[in-house]
Length: 161
Image (cartoon, rainbow, N blue to C red; front, side, top):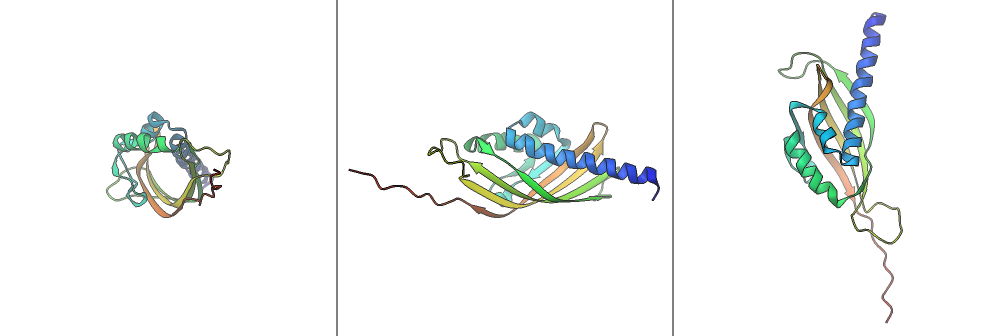
């Protein structure tokens, strides 16, 4: 591999990683315009394993905006990113796949009690497929594979008469 090819590969890896990070930030911040911009025109997402829906990026952004209103505090942690470049089925041009694990703590709207502990935490794996476009790398598909979830037990004091 020449230095030019190695540099191009490193630059592509950084750009692909940036898209994955922007995806998490858009969801956590509720920026559904930015979320839609991350996808190719035919981009799709599949949240069915987490109890959600599958569809084009516009439909998914609408569903997420309603669903995530239940959780005003959310923080995606996307780790163990494995990036692979190469052709996807029936694709032309530069493509990439990213498999990454996630943990997502969230707090329900209206939570009180002063605790900073999340009300709900889930984790699993993302499969991202990306395509290099004239505007840069864009998401072609996002598939969520939720592996676990937990809602902490609440300990309440008995009411006093």
